[in-house]
Image 1: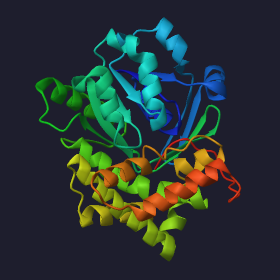
Image 2: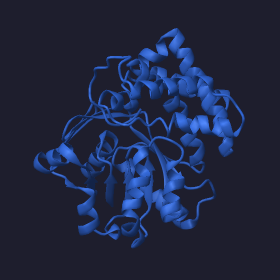
Image 3: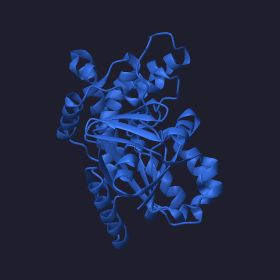
Image 4: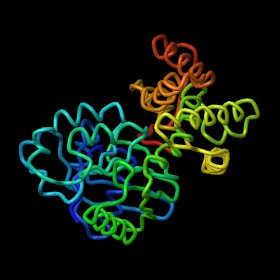
Length: 328
């Protein structure tokens, strides 16, 4: 298959490298020093169970629009920060309109799929999430990744699959599995996205605020309780999208992140590097929906506000750490 990966950070490059090693074609969209390093020296991905080092097809967004056609690709994978989704879709609007290529989102948050669907329609939109993976750009052109790196995806919105979407999903699942990417096709992808948000909202903001990795957060009695409380607030917020998350879901996700490798979240790394935080797509999604339901989200609101204040005046904490690009 022919894949276009828009967002060549840790997550996108890891999955792209796995697909390339399995014999598929992948084009990466990157920028800055990372783009130049990949052009000059290829892509190097290091994982406990996998290593990739080879030249790759990499381009910038302008060249993609001017020199390539969307119809060249069987699937477009969005592995961008959520805050970049609207801008990318606007830039690619005309380019995307000349093809029927599906788009798979592997991004944080629960709002990306609806934005993609507004651009290309439900029939071309697949929601997805990267599960149990940590990935970062060690330095331009070099990716370090950890974890089993699973993918869960499904058609958007939640509904019975059409014959076409079911056929494509089965082909894609087989393709990913043969490339060594554990994959599950969900018929309730909205619920899966909210289950992932349990973890994202539970650890990302607190990690960025404290400078601690995920294991340090969950093993600390006070901070671990706060993580759990933010997960509970996330479960309450999910009801606004007609998603019912149970106590068992919260316990499962808390156990999962507690036992996973000690990793730095993407929000912590973004803060270290002075980049915009994905607060709006993670904590903001929870707070907005709790307001809609006339519910309180006190811990999420407090941590979000402290982060907003510190970003405006970054002197409360001295954070030093390894560069990373993508999320847990």
